Image (cartoon, rainbow, N blue to C red):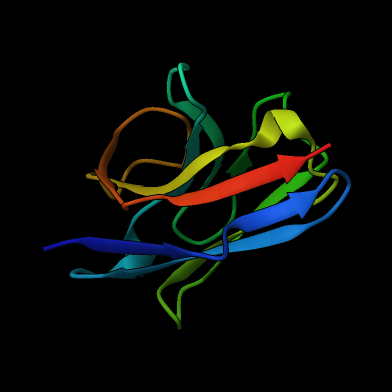
Length: 124
């Protein structure tokens, strides 16, 4: 059974940085793409970053490109999201996710397993 456990959220001021971590278990981590999503109150869940199984490809929407960086350590079964220059509009619950097919590259679609989420709050 795939399990994803996020950590690293918190309350920060605008302009600060945070690094989220997601520990995965239950299958061979290095075979699957990983991603981060977020959901703010009253809004739909939004893709914020994806990474291919061997870290060859990463994907970001324009809203976070240049500020957020996704990375993974396959030896530790962990994926990270480094968030710099945080703004109040980045406030959301952040979710780690993984896909169901080894052919997925980390693009926004195909995510089948989700963590419980970690809250990120950015004050102005």
